[in-house]
Length: 292
Image: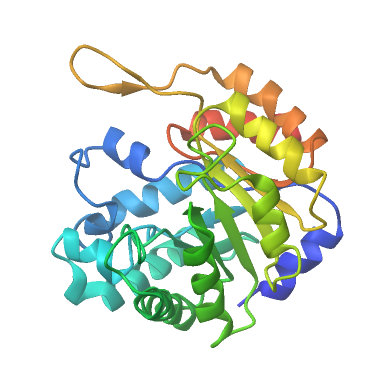
């Protein structure tokens, strides 16, 4: 694991380029809408490696494993829960194949459970703890350089995720929230609450990913940068999606536009920058050129 390398790069104060979207790009490459990307880890591994390679060529310093939905709850919805260990470990191997001997870090992606915690839902705190513990164990055993608990919306779930990971490892860890209600998460959590909760917690960086729009995500970035001493992980969607008459989703931002905005993200405190939904290798390349 290269957690120490990540920390050393952060000490250099040089922005690190994350990759772009996994799901929307795989859909562009033939993954049926509604199918779990983790399916392709086993059935179409060359597509996963190809996407990693495209992001590496575009300038990524960090690539995320295709394991966002790799916890056993989300995999169960896809009929893949019995293969959770195989999927997570294979995804790391595919990322490692793409990276080869290059100085690129591999982050283990861990999305939310997809279920509401009690009292709003049926899943208990211990269930959440065990779910994150299991997936983190698979990813760490397979050799990721650090972990990213991302697209969080509930402070309690995020706490349980961090607690579970820290019970087995001191690996570098990013905890990232999705502000898909503008400047609040789905559960109404504000950036100030996230900062208050995680400023004194053993996480390497606090993040913003996915979200509602580039404009509202920037507002969150501006607020968060003023209230946390932690490095900020910033991976917004490629603007707001538009759906055509055939039900196809499009992201209209151009490479030039997103490159111009990326420079501003750095000025406003982001230490890691990349893109979430809709961010193609072409858009990512423009981000990397603008920043580097």
